Image (cartoon, rainbow, N blue to C red; front, side, top):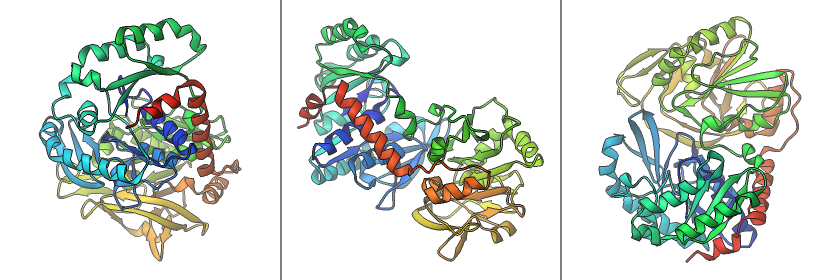
Length: 476
């Protein structure tokens, strides 16, 4: 089990790389994360949803993602509450202060999923959540040391030297853990070193001496990590230096933002996340309103940033707009939530750029789909993960067809488009045709193959700098 000294220290990437290392050695390997908090979800082969980081790790293992790989997924809906997904299906929504009381009830599901994975593979590599140093959360823990002890899984503690203070990160974690938890830790490693790793030799030995834990190496910065799906939307730096500029809004409850990952590989595009408080640049060609876990809440957030004014000005200048899932819902005249599924019941005015209205209700739609893009007739592989139905006159001009059923909507002039399809840009032929409409010649990259090549380079990188033999030998 890879645990971290904090959030965002690279645990997901380390697990993905180690999974690929093990697979290349002929082992059948599966990833597991007991509990994840993310609105970036993937639809699994068994019709559930898990964190997309675990879907990437499954790809590194050469298997289809399954709901057992992330049995508890927390999807934040507000600053103090989240939807709780257990073994792929929505269980309930809870306030943060009430979640601790729920954990003992779902601990059995975590162990059940873990045992099923163990029965399927030679090796299971587990990712922790946050940090075990959050000892105030240790009671009834199912994400870090509580899980590791219950399942008897050895732990390697990863620190992030790039954020500074890595000696204190690792030594301090040992200092706050009790003796039983510390005994479960089998060693440490240091991640994201920039420059000559030998310059950290003294610090590395100091950590080993102070903790008594063996070290498994110092992993230099892996620049190609930017080509893999990020766990946090705010990790997405601007990409490309092309003349065609794409601006994606960093909504407060942004979901499935990796929809744009394939566009990062197109050199003729510049893809930029617009952070809260920043205006949408006036020279933007395409504004993307991404998915959201709280459509009405993020409509209010969007307006608080003044983005509604920027979007309408962009539209008047002849600019293009694409809304995906929650972003599609926002483009209509209204979003109604009569039953309070995503928050207090009520109706919120939309941006009015598509002649549709949305009503929240019914079961969550979780499905992998093959669609046909309406304007080009090209096949689009994607997935749906949403609550709500949208309808109105612009649905007569669908974005795509699923079978013979229309999907999404387009404005009469085609400059405003909306779709419930996630992952659509991974379809290379569709992406190329869609970009040609902007006057952009696609680079001809096979996106899925490129992700596979990056995972192989990550495995090479880890083999060169970490004691991978030692890490794999820890398994029992």
